[in-house]
Image (tube, rainbow, N blue to C red; front, side, top):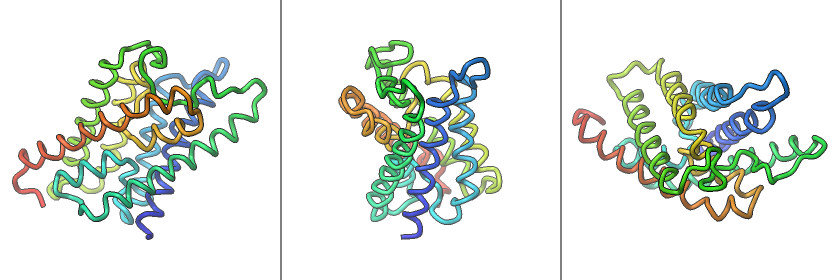
Length: 229
């Protein structure tokens, strides 16, 4: 239960910190943090939680990471579903708190999406569903390759959190214009539950593509690293 609560808290922080930076700060008049700032915010949520709860739960914060670690032989199958459930609950809680904060501004509307992920008309750059799927698949694949490598028994354990956080920052720098960047089904679910409508309709892509990318990355890294645990 301590592991699950840690995953809840960590995913809550990821959604509140990452999506919060996009909703509250990205376009703030004159001093907005922009795309670079939002990308850094998502990376920083992972870095801070990696050192805060990594020793408790492993700091997955993401169903795709949990699945990728399982397929890579690093995580027991019996714990996958409980981890995913608490990650999603944490993401919904984070999105709810963000909604409460954001709705305190005059003129606020959920039509802005609350940093939901989307494709087509709901892609920041109006990218197609196919572009969105490929982006989410490839970015999650590479994210898991980095995670599996950085947490390998032969890698430096003190650098894992920073490496993974920087990888997520880079992923956001690449893909925010395409899908608003998910690579994390829980992160996508939280805002989508608050927004409903199109965000829930398009949510399937942000589960399917990341989970497939993570699953295949786990298998590939297992083959690349035969001396893995």
